[in-house]
Image (cartoon, rainbow, N blue to C red):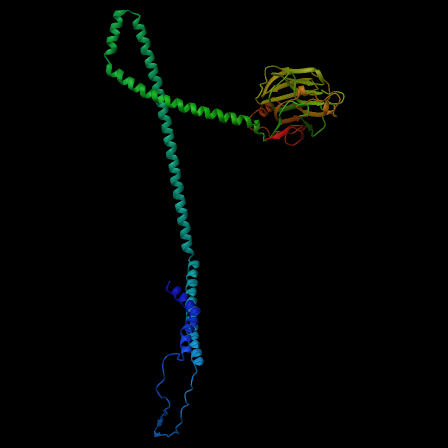
Amino acid sequence: MQRQTNIHTSINIRMYAPRAVLALCLPCFLSGNVFGYEYGEDYSDSYYNEISNGDRLQTPTQKPCPPQDLSRWDKLFIMLEDSQMKQDMLLQQSEDMVKAEMDTIRKELRKLNNNKACVQASENTCKCISEQMNHNLNQAMEQLREAADMYQAQNNETLQQLIQFSRNQASRLTKLESNSLLGAGLGQVAMKSFSAYPKEQEASNADGGKLERALMATAADLQRVHAQLALFQRTTAHRYLPSGCEMALLFPMRSKHIFAEITPSMSMSLQSFTICLWAKVTQSLTKTVLFSYGTKKKTQELQLFLARRSVLFTVGDETHLVEAHSVVTDGQWGHFCAAWSSEQGLATLWVNGENVARVTGVAEGHVLSGDGFILLGQERSRSGIYRDLDSSVAFTGKMTGVNMWDHVLEAERIKEYANHDGSCDCRGNVIGWGVSEIIPHGGAQYIN
């Protein structure tokens, strides 16, 4: 701190010294006397140096140079030069002090950088403190869990005591009623026996009051939890997609312009197949189409559709019909599968992993045509033009996990695909959900 003060003092002297000297000397100069002092002494005497080296040598005397008569300006300039010299000396001293301080600071910084052991010790200390804090936090969490378990155990115990107390009260009331029917004499005896234990009755009533209050508080807490769970279930049910699927097709309204068109991964000229999909229908009417395949000659070559609470499946035309009743619920997700084989004409329907219909002789020996169109939520019109589609058969709701195979799946695999816990990754080789091209039209759109 003292050294910084010296530096600032030197800078101030350098800036203001010439001005101060000029201000002090200028009045004296104007008055004719710079310093107010007259040199009265006479320095004109001669001085001789005597050198004795054995014999005294006589040197000729020389008169000193007479003193020059300095003018006022000369005296002023001499004074200014002296002031400038002092200022330069102070500045040089200040610079030397600053350099010395900087050298000292550099040496100390080098010592700190070279002291790696100190840095390592600091890191180890920080690690120890962090581990200690984590340990304390884990202990606190464990204590909270133990307290919660203890509170739950106490509540359970209180509830059991309350149930037992209610049973005891009920048995006492039953005994009192039975005794009252025996007659006045037996009733008086029962009353005497009951009044023989007043302290026990008062104690039981006090315990009953405490248990009743505890039960009331527990019931209120349970009601609040139930309300929160109901709200959470309604929120999650609105956005829930089954089987681990990440996206779904939304058909927001019943319209002939809203549907989806599928481009299969292979030819639809098939002798057997299995179709599986998840659907959540908003409202099922007399005919609500889920999946349809039609050609120019046969617009209803293959269809899977709903009719109120029933699900129906046709191959070839509507005469080959397989149906199952009371298996559809509006507003709930359902897994629907339809399988057919031309070799035996065996057609089966599956709903939520259960075989709900099995019919033989359905389009036996038939082979699907390979030049048709696959639609979701709508059926092909007879003219083949989209503007001629029928809005009364349009699907409204959500659909996901649409897959189709070129063979009949085993029953175990169909049950596995109907599982709500992550079977959406299993894809068909004819149509694969998330792989095959599925183009929504109108207001249909993908959601997640």
